[in-house]
Image (cartoon, rainbow, N blue to C red):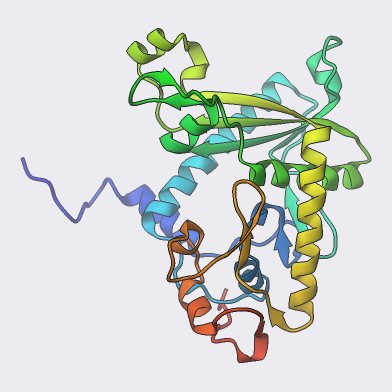
Amino acid sequence: MRLVSNPVVTHLLAQEWFARAQVPKPTALGTPLRYSSAYGCARQQGYAALGAKPTEPMDEAGAWVTGLGTLIHEALQEAIGRKYPQAQFEVASGNDYISGSCDAYIPALSFGENWTGGDVLYELKTMGTYSFDDQVGWNRMKGTFKDRGASGPAMKAIAQAGMNALGLEKTMGVTIGTIIMGSIGFEALSKNKAANMGVDSYNRFLAEFHINREEWEPLALAEIARMETINETITNGYLPARVALDDDGHAITLTPGGRNWQCDYCSFKSVCANDGDGLVYVNESYMEESES
């Protein structure tokens, strides 16, 4: 038996997904900005809006994780449609500068007369073990719950879903009462630890959070306002400064050579480093236009 460094079969699906990931994904309505960039770096959004060529495109591992998430999304949407035939999927919405599409819109009548949450916008996030455990409040290694409890979905995910909800209201003339956010981890909690923790059935690998309007709407409106400023900066001929929001919604300044995970996974890290700090005049940027 020998482990080979150059597979001839097992990598083929990953190879296809990697090739697909090299093609820039357009925004839902052809806008410069997208809902899914919520809390993201303003400079990064500027490069993407201007069609800059990525200097660090997504690698094979990133494309694989993204591909797995896409498969789960599509399969779940089909299951939702079978259970709730009135549901609609990938409904595009937006305005002149920002757009996106929802995983699912499910009208209140789908859930029966005892449902009091109004119309629902559903969003799904697939994630690794660390992020999932943080959301549900597990210390998986010890097989215990964390003292601080479950953190729930990230604020940026709630803001993204909220922007989708507000856009959907304008597009469809509906009123979203509840955002349901689903989280699916790639690894299930072991049977032994699950039994000791009192975790059973689907909860070993997925979680569902119901978020009311009073929680999601302020986050969405604040992020829409931030993106409006980003769009104005781009329209005026400048790349924005490297500013993003952290997990608590506080503004942070990023540095490509620093210890920011956002920079580590950014597709424009090198050109951003060359362009320097603060506002950058677009005509003086080192970015190259994408061929796609």
